[in-house]
Image (cartoon, rainbow, N blue to C red; front, side, top):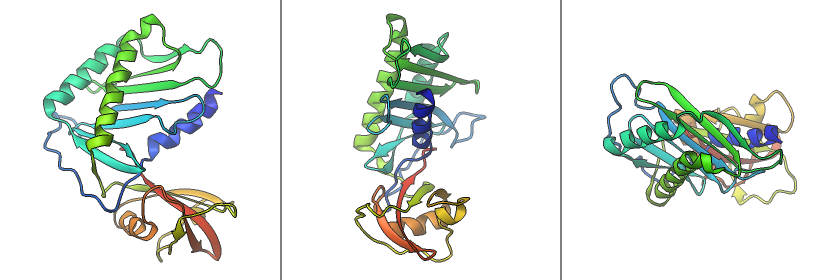
Length: 243
């Protein structure tokens, strides 16, 4: 079942919702010399055995933008430079000697898992994936995931929506779906299904002006809406991308 869990994880790493009604959080932290400000230096995902829905997910960039999901919107908390340095150093220490996959499933399927990734001050990435029930020797990893879960909760409770984030739109045909409202797909923007190789399902990422236009057209992040495009009546929803 590891393939299934990976299939669930990847979309979560790619998308997180964003609102068109918020403001962009101002971040005063400066990225350390040699690091690109928007480069991700910490990433955390925690999921149940079959789904990541309701789990934790967050990332932090080199300039201190800590982001997570709140009601399908991307929200940001700026971390002071000292806090970010301490976070990175602590995670590197926790992961030391424990990188790679720690399989504690005992052969059982559909077990919960957590993935912690951190880039050290020298630019080297460290990653640990803990699957199943932790053992006593996993205490440093458990402490790291606990710290990141608390940071995720902080971001979700106090974060400011970022309306500039790229978004991913999912579009599909589903006669049984009950969308919240009817929306108009903007002219001149390729739909996810048009961009797909075929079938009745498609996902496409939009940036800049296209993303802004689609936010306004489709409404609240995470809502299913009905749109007419290419002579078909389709269901569409959008979410913002995690950096």
